[in-house]
Length: 172
Image (cartoon, rainbow, N blue to C red; front, side, top):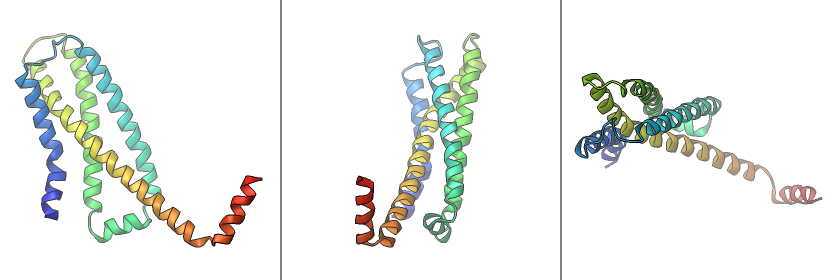
């Protein structure tokens, strides 16, 4: 059962990419639709924010490298999966950014290359959204797990009397 969940967790971005592609194809949505330029601008902004978020979070992850959660990852041999998923998310974010910028130019020229780029973009859009969700939820779980461990260890290290004394001093 655990393997099935792991497989689903690893392939659902691909499935969302295919669903996104089929959605655009089935409903005959293409780059000539009114407002598409605004959609591209929004995707460029959003993907840039996601790339910035990843960059900031990778710095935090480096500082958490020797914590209990990373030791558990290494012991269970899932640190490779973690790295793969984070790299995948970052690469897809850059790809959707680059293809969106290219599409801003190409949408002024009708042709096969523009059509292929658009449908590649439609696949990447679904893939990008799902890998971003997966990576951000994973990073947040790591952060909250780390904070819970820190809170628990701090709580265990301070006696109840000392805790009350600190609270009293803070009230003054």
